[in-house]
Length: 335
Image (cartoon, rainbow, N blue to C red; front, side, top):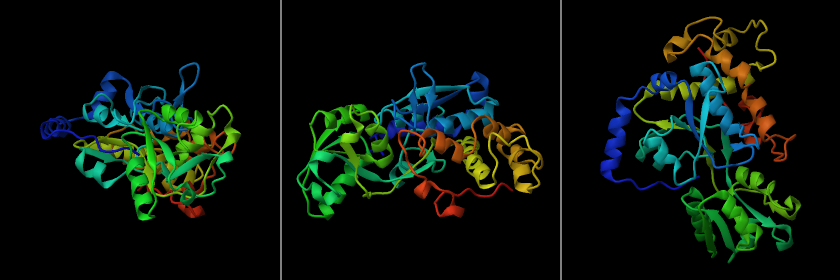
């Protein structure tokens, strides 16, 4: 989601120099924990319960990387970050990776010294309105005031959409999604706009969730995924293939319940470390894939327990379904 933070040439140079010689895997293993940047609280994606336990689709990506590199999915230090803080925290080395509903764009990929390691949720920008407003689609919102989060791609998408449709609007900016939600709930704006996933999550926190609806349709592509610093290809590969392991496990029918079974499929054997030497290419233990599936589960398990139809968010798989079932989710082969 969020706008590029403007860094000076000197600071970019410093970050590039720092990451060029980095060995994040060794650093993570030396300290015995993974520092993972997450949101300040987005139900279903990354939020802490009353006991301080973090849960969510993005959280599970952090846990998968910890399982792969440390053998224990619980060895994660979660660092809550606002949209404005997240890239600086990663660039500076405050965190080892970012898994925080962040949109993959060319600008971010090519100018911040960062790499996106894949997509763990295909999203799009939408709108939430009060039912009492009587609005059925975005084009009914000409002249409306929108609550939205500052420092996000949401601002540019909104401007592009209204300009291309010859419509006008006003903005009410906030630093956090919770503040945007409060502005919407107290009537500071007519509509709240953000990634649809975030809108579904925020609606569950309204005093009366049934008073608001998320409009059908989106105005942008928002591929969300984990991010790492450039200059450490080994770490980039580890994060990328940890996510791919969750997707591939679902593709092959392997989950946390049956992972101890004997499988005849050669790709399953390679994924679980029963044959081959894929782990050597990543510099990991032979059981790295097994640890991910046994401790975190496959992608489908993560989706269903965090944001699926049995949760308050009640999100259908849609484009986040496997490619073999009509969705966009696809992993390169484990061979």
